[in-house]
Image (cartoon, rainbow, N blue to C red):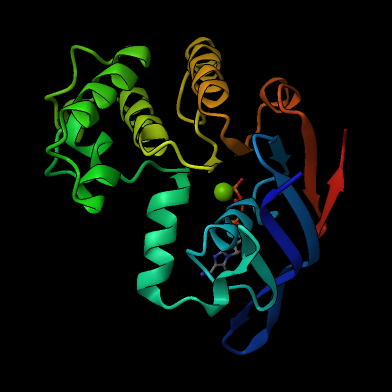
Length: 228
Ligand SMILES: Nc1ncnc2c1ncn2[C@@H]1O[C@H](COP(=O)(O)OP(=O)(O)OP(=O)(O)O)[C@@H](O)[C@H]1O
Ligand SMILES: [Mg+2]
């Protein structure tokens, strides 16, 4: 089976002024196969966001390598890395990062806008289909500041699935939602994931959500422990 992403001996520490460097995790190895779903739980500050950002090439490890499609991403220049991210990855931030001057529909279409295919009618239809699935058909022309926190989070999910990426990295995608909505949104998200055969890494504090993924891990004391 092909692996969409491999982590090889990933370590991360932060250097601090007038203090020893802060080691977050050490020698993490993880292989993510195509269309596989994985959850990562761990206490606050255990390094989940740091790990996800390194996997996405948004931050660099202190040592170790990340391979996407068997390609070492540290060998790519910024343009190549951005192109790869826009084509193959969907990232959902712990605190949604929508662009305030764009509507829900435009934010969803951001990968198409970047790829220069936003004028394509099929792209529009697809964005509307995804937003409708996520219960936002009447919010497409709203700007982020006119949306509730949960609605913004759903737009962030829509944007992450828009370009049918090979891998979605989701950092607490339902963290800002009430329990009921969180589970509803997750179900729709998983439906879209199955439809697209996307691999999914989800960081969550919710053990019920974590248990829905095929493989479960806990980040603890700088190590990634397999739970199931
Ligand atoms: N830029 C930075 N400089 C120094 N330390 C940092 C930096 N970014 C993160 N850290 C530290 O790294 C640790 C891991 O942070 P991270 O955000 O990865 O945790 P997390 O597991 O996602 O936590 P949470 O569940 O609260 O979101 C924290 O102790 C944090 O203080
Ligand atoms: Mg975090």
